[in-house]
Picture 1 (cartoon, rainbow, N blue to C red):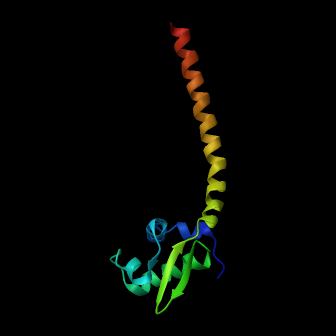
Picture 2 (tube, rainbow, N blue to C red):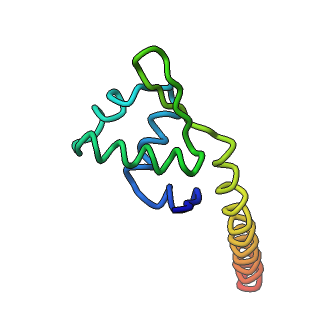
Picture 3 (cartoon, one colour):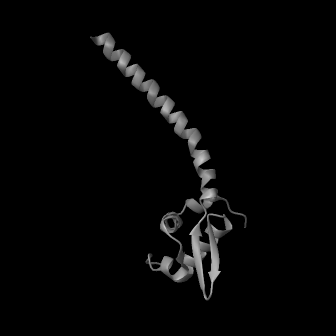
Length: 106
């Protein structure tokens, strides 16, 4: 199944995993220790994040370490930027309207 970054961040557990890995790389057990769900469930979330390119896994000896891939998060930032601009423009227009209305009342 082909997944994209938007599917990956739709789940709160996966968003929390990304947040954890944003601070530092962690092995799979360390990631799992932060959640009250099973290790296989965490492994499934890790697999989805890896398929989407949001995290990478590197083998170091017997350990597998995960780290966030911030380049893929740029897709989300770019998508959200269009809505940020839209809402900023709308709020600026509302502010201007309220200021003009206030001046009329004075």
